[in-house]
Image (cartoon, rainbow, N blue to C red; front, side, top):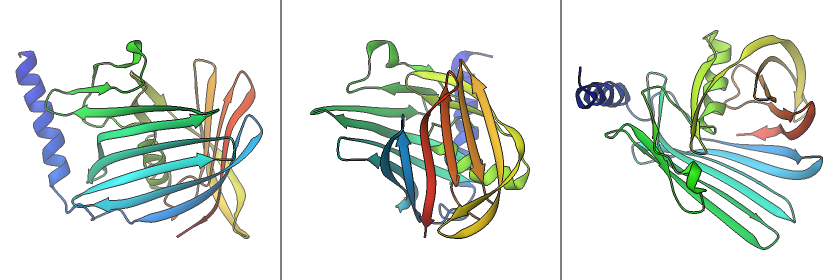
Length: 227
């Protein structure tokens, strides 16, 4: 089978899956507010999901008086397939600004990065149906954990493709906006870094996310409200 033919088959599968259902069939717009910490420095965050014609935009912004970070992903969805189309990462701190756009080319079956991306992180990186980016991972976990699905993902970001497999680590009670809920804790570790998320059935995003490196917490997000 030639490479061109293989790409054509993969593209047809990805696009046909994305076209099987109406764009708004299984997603609902939301706004989620988070309290955040980066290396113990407090910040606030907001994640939004909004329709954009037949597509969707998922955006996350975290900021305090000194710095801000924002991510956005344009994607389509059908039958549980989250198909990223493009996105942008932006960071602003100490008077500096960094912007890195991402493009998912499903005809060429590759992802590329531009703007302020380092030369070694521009790609191209080969992609395949089922790949997601780091932001869409939040939606995937919120959907797959309550459904009892396997938590195995291939995440495309920062000029790399990396497998991420989460394991369930029991349940814990969490409090969101004064309301006690039972959350399923899931975790994954690779390259000395650990990501842990707490998922509550019926909540469209993780209620808590913690990233740690070398045993020390680097990033923490706690859901305070959503609508």
